[in-house]
Length: 397
Image (tube, rainbow, N blue to C red; front, side, top):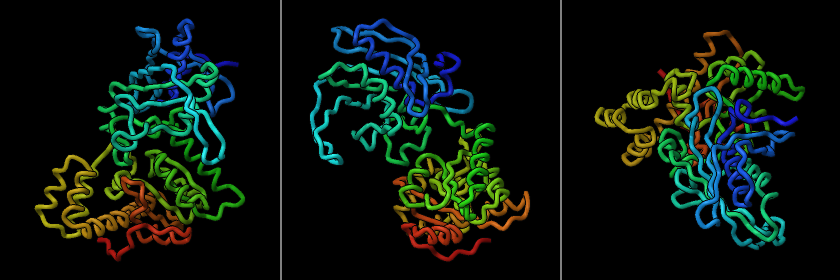
């Protein structure tokens, strides 16, 4: 059975819509008639899936083709909704090189170019593309490329740079546009009740496993999951969660978790220190306000606290503090990590009494594990992991 486009092709991640446009453009370059429904081989599905494309045509001169698609992430809050995607393709010579891992000659048949609006790893760097996205392109384009030829593929997101300013991409070194990331075809709507229920069901399955020993790490987003694996935290169950932190913490306690570690980007976890347990930016922010409140408790000068409140972003506020007093920033972030633990325990206490220790560990915009609260430091030590900044003693009011 083959799925079909239109209604069924909604709710897909950005790389899928890019791959559909890329396939349509390549078919145009081959002189084939345009099809508004592109059948894609998806790495995480057993059968081809039809994805809609708006248009495709060969450009003047016949050496390049363009196809356009429009992203539809399905229901929920997603800034890529309606995002227009342009994909330009043209033939190129094969680049013959050596695969260092396999020590064999290889032919680089696909040259992916980051056009306007596509995020790169640093200014002028490589396109920020996930392994899933690259495999998706390879599966669907390689069979179309004539023997002895290569393909240059340029992706342009006309609104990509503007939309990227509303994300935390820059915090992870991605600049100039939206990253083509994702680990699956289907969108995970982190703000939807359905996604919450799926997360809780997955948590319960992990806790019901015969080898479960009472410890678990909740990671926020793909960057948190990737970092957790790099740090070796997969020695205990890892669960990537969305924005419903509060209900998931309660579900973890109910499922018998005794040691719970919250790992996330500091710009996300800071909200928990302010008592905000649903962290989607459409519903609540308050990060600068929480940071200012922490600064008051640390006794920062009043004029510095005023500057914090007037900063354009969290990153700008931290940069200002780091320039003036790095040690003060260190103290501020340890207070924040400890407050995340304290507020999380207080949140849980509203719903019942469980024997559970909640730890918090925060990473920075370079994806370095920097700070952990008292509980988080202990839990990380058991796993043989130490934050880069050594802990300090704090007393919470």
